[in-house]
Image (cartoon, rainbow, N blue to C red; front, side):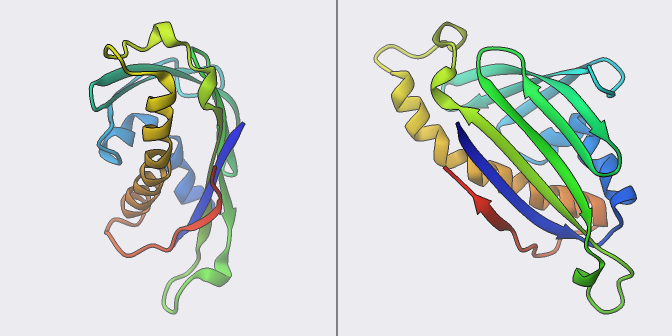
Length: 173
């Protein structure tokens, strides 16, 4: 399993941050490759999200299921179709990271674990002469940059304005 773990700080409390982390239908605003998110359920544990992705000549709909929520600390998910992947959004209070004049801060962690070679080839309509290995080699570096974009834009939504955020990459494949 490959793993991406990164974090950043938002200048808000976990209680203020968590609703943004949980609002998956807003995520297409955070990345160019996520075209649409459709929810089946009420957003609680057991809800399923269809994540319509598009990159290059490929399109794919990932189905993600919320497996655990411990508000305002954690939301866990896993994919339920065609790829072995799971992850977690975690929010921890970190008031010592708040700059002068800001009341508090929280550290937001994004973690994803996945096996890129577990992809069901029949679920992907690969162009002729394009192998799954080639796709994995091309997509893997993009995963980190996509995760970074999501986290940066998420912080802008949480705080109501864009600013330079420092991303800490704890682990990458």
